[in-house]
Amino acid sequence: MTALFHRLDGAIMWAMGLVVIMTNLAVTVLILFLVLARFVLGWSVVGVLELATLSAMWLYMCGAVIAARNRQHLVVDFLSQALPTPRAKALHDLAVSIIMVVLSLFFMGLARDMVDWSIARPQTTAALSLPLMIPQSAIVLASALFIIYAFRDLVIAARVVLGISSREAGEL
Image (tube, rainbow, N blue to C red; front, side, top):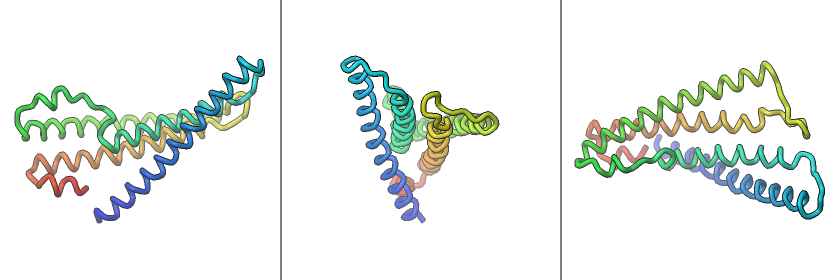
């Protein structure tokens, strides 16, 4: 079962990495073009900023998922490094994991409310008439993956606190 989870995680991270690379390039090229067109050529190109913003939403959300997956999203390590015993560190990790699960569920609730609003009152961008659900879908995907990785971290932290070896806990 863990082999399946590892393959699934690998596929998700491959897709996230691809999206991050593509959207990073898109944001860079679009903003560079926008600046050059506006200030060098004197052109006002409609829709370029909308495409850059859409790409940026996907870039930020996928980057946040990668950071959450690597347990680097919310890191304040001053306290965890100051804890004197491995048991205290394990309890700290468990507390952080519980907080992350709660925050991830809250984020999913906000994403659901956003989708409900978007379905009830569909909106599009001003210049290109792109549905706002395109960038909003990045938030929905990120919130779902945040929950998955938060629960993974919670299970690992609970197993460590309960005394299951860290090697076995790390296999999740």
